[in-house]
Length: 87
Image 1 (tube, rainbow, N blue to C red):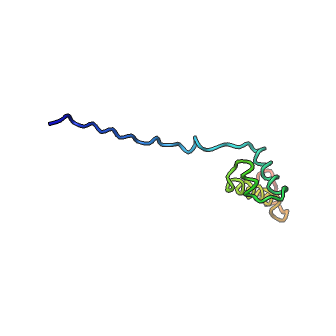
Image 2: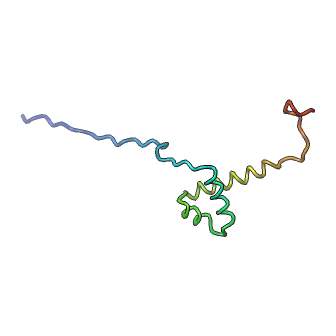
Image 3: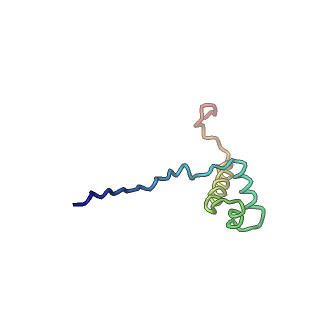
């Protein structure tokens, strides 16, 4: 009989998603939102120019719009749920 064969299996390196994720500053996000809203360009083009996925820029714009509407919600009556606010 011949010599036993040695088989070597290589397992592909598992890529941690956190290693691939880029982090953007709040200032960059705000500038990207302003550029998207004020440039008159399509969001796809702005995202490509900034090197950001379209879905990310769309999410930033949606979050900014939600913050604006959340800031002025209600009809101005205090609910009294906070201890410093009287009922």
